[in-house]
Each structure stands twice: as C-alpha cells, then as structure tokens.
Amino acid sequence: LAASSAGSLVVGSTASSATTSAADSKANSASTGAARTSLERGDSSFQSDVMAMLLRYQSLDGGGFQCALPSPVFLSLSELWGVGYEAFASPINCHYGAFRYFSAFDDTDGVFGSLGSFFAASADEILSCGSIELNPPFSADMYTALVE
Image (cartoon, rainbow, N blue to C red):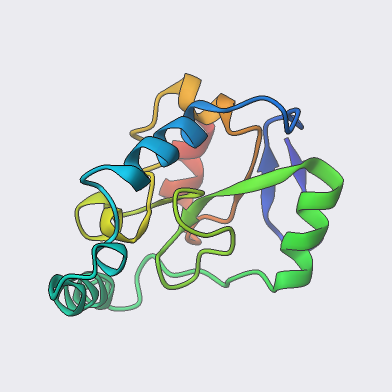
C-alpha cells in the first residue's frame, strides 16, 4: 500500500508482465463474447447504453464524485509501481481502458468494459491485477469499507 503525491492510494504489488491475471483472462473472454461493448457490437443500442450510464451517474447528484488524476500521475504510477488497473473509475474517466477498471454500476458500466464493483470482486481477482490505483469518492464510509 502506497500513497501518491496526488492523494491516491496504490494497493498490491508489481506483477510480472508475463503473468496473465484473472482480470486479464476475464477481459479477454468478455471482449470476445456476449459482454462486448455495444460500440464493438456495432448495434443501435450504443446510444441507449450511453444514456443509461449518464443518467445513472447524474442520479448521484454530485454525491460520490471525486477528483480525477491527471495523465502524468497515472504514467508515474504505472512506471513506479506497475499500476494497470483502477478501482473507482467510470466509463467517462477511466484511464487504462476497457476491462482494466472497476466501477460503481456493473449494470450500466459493464457494456463499456467495467469489471464491476471493486467491493464485489473476489480477493483472487483483485490480487491478480497486480497494483491497482484507488481514488475513491471522498467519503468516510467509503474509506471505512476499503479498510475492512
């Protein structure tokens, strides 16, 4: 566990790039199966998927938002600690791309490549990711849940 100068936490350890993680395996199988994004499928549901996702985040009415890290910070996290996943991203602000982030709403974010909720992921799945950037919403309850 380490803290970056930008206020994010990094959890995990640097994993060898030759090792395939469970999350990578999930991403590879999901991207070739039914869980492909609507944009990849090329169907007309893409606009509906975007609208559902945007309305879901708008329903938070400002609650649960946090400051996003700038790209140079993500680059430093990758170079220093091998970070390649985000625990609290959204399809709108994920840095590492599809199937490399956890988000709040699997039902609306899954079609955009979310791995689902960080809290719902198994310990094996989380550990297989190597180092993960944690930038949760600014909430005492969220910090308590992370510690537990």
